[in-house]
Length: 562
Ligand SMILES: Cc1cc2nc3c(=O)[nH]c(=O)nc-3n(C[C@H](O)[C@H](O)[C@H](O)COP(=O)(O)OP(=O)(O)OC[C@H]3O[C@@H](n4cnc5c(N)ncnc54)[C@H](O)[C@@H]3O)c2cc1C
Image (cartoon, protein in one colour):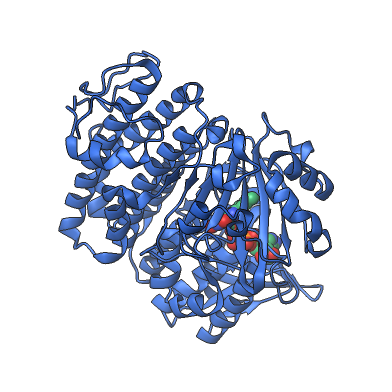
């Protein structure tokens, strides 16, 4: 007779491990098994990619799973994301436009060594009482009415267990997708190569320029995820514990073909050519390179996520988009949150049919709303003013809506979600339309932003509304009835911000008056006529205009008194 479990998680990588902690913490008597094919301990540093966390996923790990103490003690704190633009000054970092916080951020995040983290998470999940088996390769899943049967091999022998729920967390192996054929390609042709080096790479040391040195407290640059950017690519520099560093290229295939950086030799040559300051830094470090990996065309969607037959996919076994803005752990968080909620309700005797379908629609909507941030946008990566504006916009939307909803448990509050998703003028519809409008605007603006912006610093916290959006994530938990109001208030701020950005952009690109009224739902730089049920004409808001001024690298339109 097969042993019976409540949940079997296929794959014990980051998504599976975090879900195992979540379920056990929320239901201590749950009977849970994790099957992981790796035989032994994960190597430190030179293991998997996915090292940088951002606000939403960090909240999940620190607050929901209680890993705050562990992360503070064992992984590096992260000081946000930092971007170096102005590609004309690639040899002199202090002349590049720098975007990033000058201060230590109020909302914590981390730079994570994945080998150390996954090894420690295995100990934690076992300590809680979960069964975690290494060296077990899942070979089959049979979906049944009351129970599913999972087959795996251990020490060359076939074993079988029964379970009410199956969660596929097998990452890019995507076990269920392959078995049931629900893979879905996604048209975003971006690829990557990366390596870890046993050396501390600190961009702070790349220039003695007094202004560059005094602009920001020592180590805050080092602790950021550094992005070096130009048309069609970004290069990451991520610090890891033990003075090691992760370095990677992410590039659009149509601008930087994969075969120009798909070996270590070619990657180093590519860096020499495209990011010479980093290239010089790496020259003496060849002997300290610890690993090298590549991933071609890494984006994909998934036709299935949460199935009413009591199985789900989480992490990279489901959807993956793009690592720009580091949303990988965020998507793990969302999938684990939905999956955990379904499992616990079902084990408690509740019918979860509606919720399952609802969460499947919701995660797909979140993915579809997120992907336009990247799709066909890589040509803009070399445009400094477009990128400063876009990054501030994207962060504002992410903090004030997505993250706020998650940290206040809004995404699993069906009553609230129904209220915000229903109808063409619903909150979600407006938010989706506004986001799409802004990504279209950035794309159309690209060719006009040709100035050589030099030696400028853009700090998100110089924009008070943006600072408030970030602080709101940690400072207050909103009661149910206040959350919807807060979301609508934030959306109204975003609408005004969108309209003001359009005024600035259109003034710079086409010379239109800076004080014109703008409809954020129909505005267009190309003259394309758009219609929207959410259409609203907004007069200039002096306060928002004032708040946005610090992000403007061009001479600020003289006639404006704000
Ligand atoms: C270039 C790049 C950069 C990235 N950077 C970031 C970043 O900075 N921050 C971020 O948050 N995310 C980042 N990501 C995303 C991040 O890597 C993923 O979100 C994360 O690693 C996915 O974790 P997972 O648990 O789904 O998969 P994995 O960590 O791959 O785990 C899957 C596990 O399943 C096991 N397995 C597979 N098949 C079987 C089987 N048949 N039986 C048993 N076990 C099996 C594997 O051994 C593995 O341990 C990046 C992704 C890319 C491509």
